Image: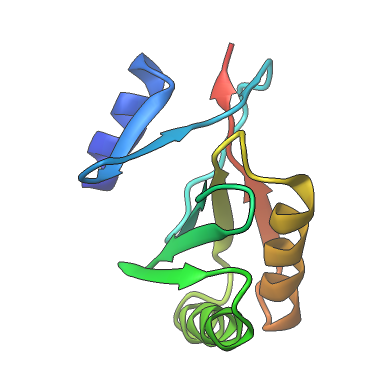
Length: 121
């Protein structure tokens, strides 16, 4: 499944993760990348909410209880894969502050490295 997602990324900027959910990664001239067992997908759900998909679960970023649950999910996976890099695939419409909050949450629970995905130009 993961291989299919990465293959689609190479062909098009839109990736279908769930029926009706499309991620449009921002473009950048970088070609380096990393392989990871930890992938978080962040989507904008309008001006007032963002959604994170991680380990087949949905978390609403602006609900404190769900944000704590996301941190716990990160912590569990970090214990399973202590050297893994978290890759954040954020839709280009997600505010920068939201991405930074997720990065900080991951670092706070023990994930040592975080990368933000982009689509090559």
